[in-house]
Every structure is written in C-alpha cells, then in structure tokens.
Image (cartoon, rainbow, N blue to C red):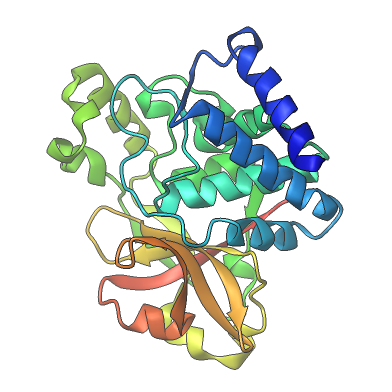
Length: 287
C-alpha cells in the first residue's frame, strides 16, 4: 500500500515539475530519481525527531553499494543536478545531508529535498551560475555554517590544530575544469578564491586519530572532511563516520572500490595509509 501511494505521489509530482519552478533542475532520470528519493524519505520518516546524526547515518546507509561515478555535476549549463543512481564523495554527502535536513523539517517530498539540496550546494542557498557552487569544502563549511544548516565540531575535540593554506587549486589548474574556459566564469572563480588566501581552519592531525579519547567524541553520522597536503587545496575527500565493533570507520563513495562502502579499515588506519592526507575536519547537521 505504501509503495502504491508513493508511486501516485511521484507520478503527480512528475507531471507538475515545471509548474513547481524546477526548470533549473537536471535529473539523471527524473522518474527513477524522484521515486527513489521519496522512498528513502518515507523510510526515514520515523527519525524526524531523532538526533540529526542518527538521521544522517541511517540515510547514508541506504546508498551502500551504489556505483561511484565522478563528475556528474559537470557539463552543460549549471543546474541543480540530482542523481541518486551514481555518486562521488561530494554528491554522496550533499545528498544525504539534504535528505536528513528534509526529514528534520517533517517533510517527505522530493521537491523539498531538491530545495534543500540547492540550499546546501550553492552560495547563499541559491544557484547563480557555476561559481555559485560551493566547490571548495572550506567555502561550503563557511557558507552553510553562516546560514545555520550545520556546524563544525573540529575545535571542540581535545586535540586539534590549525592549518593555513591559500586555496586556489581550480584556477591554478584551469585546464582540469572545462567551465573555466569561459573567461567570465574564470574571473568569478578567482574572486571566490580571493576570500581564501591564507585561510585558517581547524583540523585534527591523523596521528591523533588513534587516541581513545578522540574516538569517543566522534558520533555516528558525523561528516568528516579529509584534509590534504596537496598544494592550493584544502580537502581531498568526504565521508561519514560509522562504528564497527566500537571503532570509527569511514562510510564513503570510494574511488578505489568504485562504490559506496563502509571501509574495512578503522578510520585512523585508513588515514595513515594515505600519504597525501594530513587529518580531518568534523561537521554535524544542525537540529
């Protein structure tokens, strides 16, 4: 019966999409995307009054096994791209957080999800061209924190440090980003990066992640942004914390595994094995 009602609701939403002002939305497959979004939201509805991290972890696990595909937001004019069949580390985190936020509002409509996805993905919560997308995780954290969508927990841990970097990887590697071939877009991105010259941000060094007192502070459903030693870049990977036998593990869209997985290695071992990772930042969804 629930599936039947879901199908009716999705079908009605599909017919009236343009009337709802969704002409700026690009679906991978509108019918299957909206059906899957609605099903996950309804399945998660019982958690609307739960701790936000509980909602996040539950929803994140609904995507386990989904294929990893990079670059699904690229190509063509900038639109609010929705693709719940293929995820990379960033779209995985954005999709889950937008769903968890929607459930926290007591809503189960895919249209509310799309609205919240735009709110989290774009500067000021509104799409306004390629440069309005929050490409850098530091920019994403600053903007969403300012608007009250989530907050950073990193500097509430007992062991944390600060890192200072000038973040301008995109314009320094213009050839890697086709959209930057346009001179106007390129200048817009340079203006964004000006705000992140000598940017100071907190992080927990990977050497400290094996400490038992740090492990106890993590919550299942925390977002972790893995910081990098790569020049001009702040964060190289995103995922969620989940616990396996009492140990924090990374749940993420893995390029190596080519799917969404719970990594077999405990978090501190996963971090140690990557030379380019320096540590991590911790973000939590707000109530």
